[in-house]
Image 1: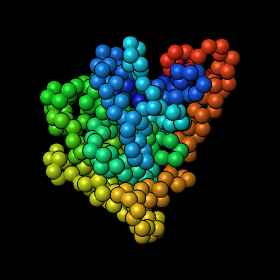
Image 2: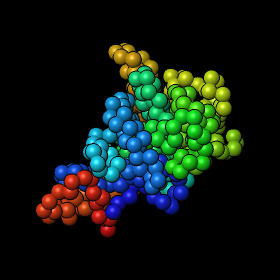
Image 3: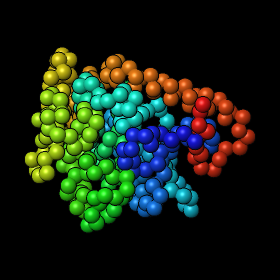
Length: 305
């Protein structure tokens, strides 16, 4: 089978993810399963809630397990690399341009979700999937799925300690400032390879903004609109994104990421790895065309050679 995550990165992943076939056998999907020993019902509850997510980088579930089936959910396939895999492919921390575009795009999506009255509660390096046209934010509700409110979550399988907000680690209810903390830790990872780097390890362009996101006091973390402005402010991309007419609550800020997610936003080695994955999946799809009967639930693709 084709696992999406590379175990060599050793990054905690809150769910098992595969490139698989849809239930009717006609489409390739990204299939997610709970970790062994995880609470299947909480996993499915968060997957069901994710179906209604909005935002430019949201990755909502489009199909879920039926009654009596083992827990799973799926979303349409597109070539993606988890952020830890992208760093491994690139050979180290990502370029400033990539980190900046990543931060703006993810912050825009979180702003939309918070406008829906939701807290993502699962932002981490492994939850970020890099595609050619921008990132996708997966693993919605991973913190809630790991343990109910009131239960300490520190050290639980699948949760990346460095990106787990301290108030959630102690069992607190996930709230929007926790998403800002987790986003800061994820950007620190993209820029340094660690979610909890020393201050002097962080590139100067991001040092202050990441430090503010990682404040232990939720009330002192930046608002997402400010975070977008701080990350976008030094790009030198022109004024179009700043002078556009606002036609909706998120239109103006979404122009920020559109001007950053242009050709070249990803390093060449990451682009090459995405192309390789796409070709391998296409080869596997051709090999499976002779299948006579579709499976009753998503099934993993054979590992493409």
